[in-house]
Image (cartoon, rainbow, N blue to C red):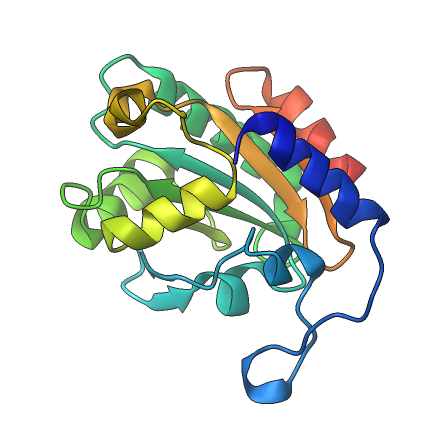
Length: 197
C-alpha cells in the first residue's frame, strides 16, 4: 500500500459506516481499522518479558503512539526520537499508562532481544509504565510496519533497516482517529498531535 492509497483508505475509514465486527471471543467490537488489517493482532514481546497480541492487548480502545526503531541506530535518529518521546512522557504525566500509551517496536528483532530492550527501556530511556519497547518474529513486525504504511516500494531499500523513518502513528482506536507525527520535531509538537485525538 503506497502513501496515497493508505491516506485514502484512512479517509474512507473516517467516513465509512457499518457495524464493527466482533473480536475473537465475542467480547468487544473491533474498530474498522482493525477490520481492515491496519491494526493486525500479531504477537509481540515487551521489554517486560510479557507476550502481547497487538490489537487485543495493546491497541483496542486505547490512545497510543506507535513507532519503530533500532537500538544500535547508527545515524542518531532513533535516540533523538526516543528522547523526544521521553520528554512527551513527562508532559503526559499521570495519564501515561492510563489514558495514553507508547509502543516502540524494534526493526531488528534478531538483535534487539527482550533483555536488550529491557535495559534500553529502563536504564537509558527510563520508560514509565505504559511505554513498551517491543520485539517479536520478523514477519510479525513486518506485518505491523507495512500495515502502518511504513515501507518503501523498492524492496531493496525496504530491506535496509538504516532506511527507517522517524515517524510515528498517533492512534485513538476507541474514537477511530489517526494522526502522524515526526519524532524529530519538538516534544511540544508531538504532544499537540496526541492531544488532538
